[in-house]
Length: 98
Image (cartoon, rainbow, N blue to C red; front, side, top):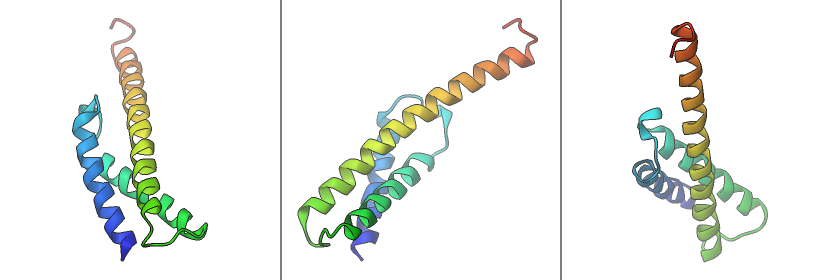
């Protein structure tokens, strides 16, 4: 049950990150919340396998902060890749004039 709670919390953090990070016109509405939820859930499961207890405070802190960090880096990489791809596509479609 705690995995569900931490995943929902992470999705809301991802929704906030969507509006705090630059370039939100480069991706869809649910990409960042989904990335945050998936990263946080994966970290949570990894920590459980390492022996962290569900009711301990550190598992929550590590999972949510780690998921937020992965989401931030991933979002910035997506924005950069999209910008480069868009510029390359514009150059190709304009025949090198733009």
